[in-house]
Image (cartoon, rainbow, N blue to C red):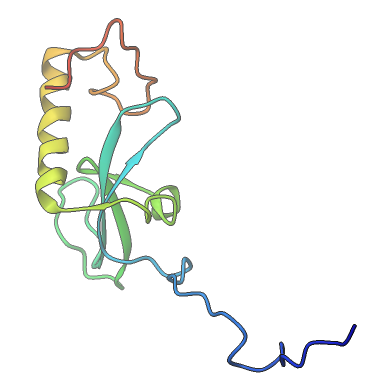
Length: 128
């Protein structure tokens, strides 16, 4: 038996990874859950000036990555890169914000009102 003449160390024989760099967030909208067994919401990742936590006005500070889950600020490390596999659009983001606002008023004990709660299918309102 003889050895193969294929040069495995050559550049043509190696494969390259075609994915993305997970260390740098990509601005956009993504679906994710805040906890296992919870409801899905939408995360908005943006790079820009920080917002005042009390008034919501833009601050004159250095730009940074910010994440908003259903309209509420969360740490970027909580969302990225876990949400990167399920991108969506702004329409889904606005719908998730409206659904959470409705649930906070109409069903305050449900997981739709507080995404950090586990979804209980026997006591939660129907999602449509």
